Length: 187
Image (cartoon, rainbow, N blue to C red; front, side, top):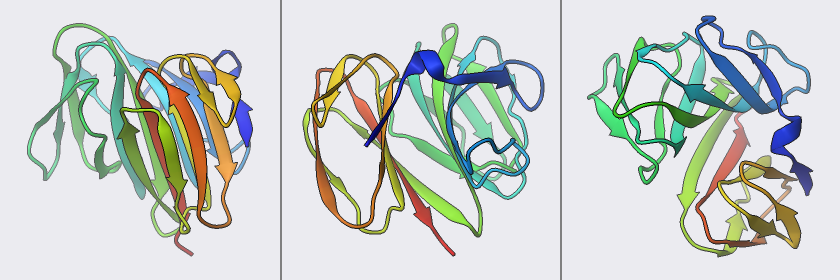
């Protein structure tokens, strides 16, 4: 297990230049937005507008803080996301517009390159054991509050990352929800 601290995350402009992304991790290490295999990031969203287009990328979005936002994704029904919503998956190359419901939010964004990787994101409400899936090459846990993951103390928005080579159990002690991100190699 490797612990990733929120204070160390890399900050960069959005692809469309209209905001800032906080990159938690990317593969391969040091990859740009043009050539990553997979990427996990957070972003404060402070105004309504169009999302950046990411060709050949699948995305899943979750709301970490704030009241929420409504997403209109080309070819899909409009959805309203909040902090208690299930993570929402959509194609990164579909035209997507967001409208904030009541002020700024912070989102968690997982992206994988089609044909190389896929992903699953699960919001977990309670502490306990989290099963590492046999098909996940990498499993990551992002905490929303104070937590202990396999005995390591994590603060708000810190993460723990596991290179998984098979099924296993991870013990999480948290009073706030955590997000479990599984990256699956498809080739």
